[in-house]
Length: 536
Image (tube, rainbow, N blue to C red; front, side, top):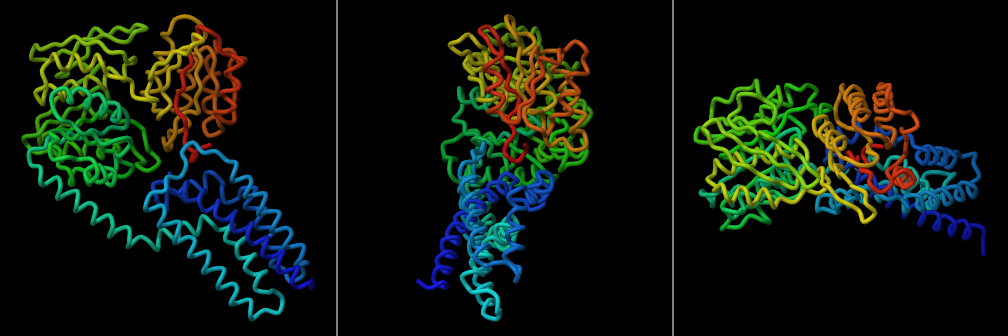
């Protein structure tokens, strides 16, 4: 066997390994791009914050690429380096577990296919150019091109998305117009919009449970709270016999909620909260408020806005284009209030009172002031739509906790789990810790990575969260590095919290191992937030 043939075979084997490695890396990059809502600017910001472009693997690949491109290097040695690197990186990528893995939607598949085409085009161009070189053969150049594509895989994903932009725009327009036609064909459908910095998903579930006692009701599933999520719900789930459609409306930029309202035209709008959530994109709390109130501003004169006055930014914002009903647990002077709130291990009791003298005692298995507030909003809406009191009471009593939103579980070993892992915010986390602090019995343990997307207030609000942890918990396990310093300093700012009860974990897996050596029967464990792979 000739030396040249052996070299060609080595290059081919290394290229196969490099191709497998690049395929895994492109999938990972696409996963992170998807978690950043397919928005290039958000993805670039994540790349900068996570230092993914300068990771150990990327830097190693760049060194190998430089060695391979050097005309003074030993070609066989370079091929061996490329092959070893590709295999090691592929094994590492293959072993990784993700909290929120890539969802192979139609859009994700299109981006991936275009990315593969771009890689093929780069390799083909490199092969053509190698014909003009005295140093490199085609098989060697293709291998080096694959390593180069690995180094810039995130750029390939961004370019693929840019190329597909006109296509995505046309596809989106078709889906939106189809959803609009379906909604227009149901003029009697009552549409309720729900938005807020937090609490909107829980309120949606509670309202759906109550309204289903009296109406045929549909709600947007999961976190389908974007325009395309609503469009998908209308096209795939809305039926001609539905009487009420509950639409959760999320926003990360001004105009997002208006866009949803222009599609569905709600007659009732619930605003659950305005707080420092998504400040990285909104910049100021005033812009958050104005964006949430796009829902109230879109209501017709015959419509009803249901507003949570427990939040200062909401209470001071008038609604003049529609009837406005204000509710609150702590605020004074509201149209509806939750009074006589009492907690027990079995749940919560409270009474809803209206200014007009109407009142309704309620019992629920849910715990925490945040849940009381969300139920209150749902009750106000249900009464507005004409649901009888008996049906409201029965529905509230049977509401199941929304998974990962301060749901309570008890293990066979006698440990109480407070699961508030879905999404942490300044108000919800404080309320969850107050519930933890009120639990009787053994140690009160909190596991948290802190809060995210708080912009310039990121450190300050997580420091404050640490102080709240110190007041209500006996043991704290801080997960990850993203908010570690702020949480640690906030917790230790309380001179009564023992430093020996503060534990630092690199991941939730590490936190679970630490917990197993701490927890005992009678203890209560609060899981407060669970960051996606976008944050470490």
